[in-house]
Length: 389
Image (cartoon, rainbow, N blue to C red; front, side, top):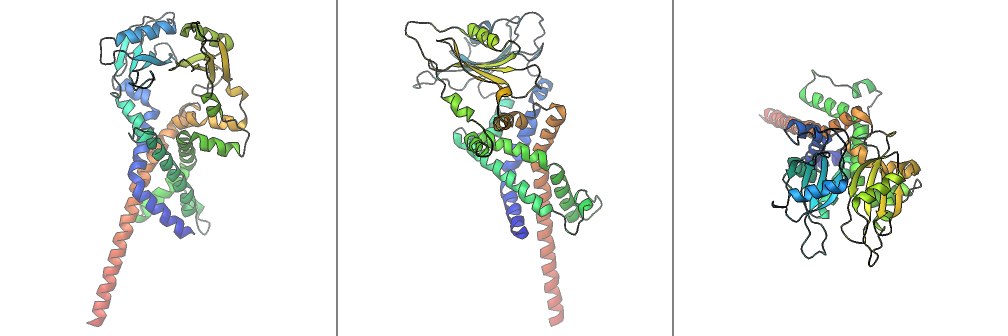
């Protein structure tokens, strides 16, 4: 069994090393995307101090800013509010899709000063390096749902490599100390084997957590059903997808600022982080709110508000979640390196580098073994030839 797992581990790693390395490296970069964007001369900070303008005014300013650009006609589909003074407000825009009943298509982003409403940055659709990295990490630049499915299966391969790696690494004859260390002056084959195994076992826990959370993001319904079969957990994603607003003939829906006021009335101690606007008349607003007592990046509360009836259709507060629901809600923050402070963020960054290290050491071991076998075969041929002579 150990030999069979070794062959599966070897060939799946050799065949899929390139896409696995690509997903790992892009994930590491995205952990620090805000810092990298700032170092690369990205969006200038919003230095103006004062009271933040209403969300409706931000949306109007963003849509006006693209009126004479290639994004003319684009409408706001989501708003991300500043987390701290100096941060910009981010308005995501989308153009109506032709023949789709007015549904949003791909769009860009506007970053503006939330106090003065001055535009700080306009990002065209698909033009940002970080946006390209996001798509590369999430779906390997495959536009359809197939891309996310492929990435999900690669995540399962990572889990399988981690699980089989434990069996292959497991020390024989009680040599535990050697199994956790690297003999730096060893021969190349031994050195690469030690490095492959020791780094793998030290980073295994984080690697498996990040890989599992990536599989969840690709196959949320399957993982939710699996968790729900063991622990009590509602399928909140399916329930939320079925939430519908009820348009009322002859009545005008409340605007976004009134929606924000309702949310703050419902959760007065929470901080509004993000708003997703309805793309159709029968869709509610979706607002995410962070609780000050919870760690930054932890799962936020989510409100669904019907702008026609002015009713809150659902309030998804993590404080009310079951254990299974909490596990599911934490998958995205864990995958992104959020919610557990800087140490976890650095560990997630390092876990993205592991596929590269495993590929280098694994391929090197395979090549060295091939060379050794070839040399041994040549020596045997020479020995046989010498006996015959």
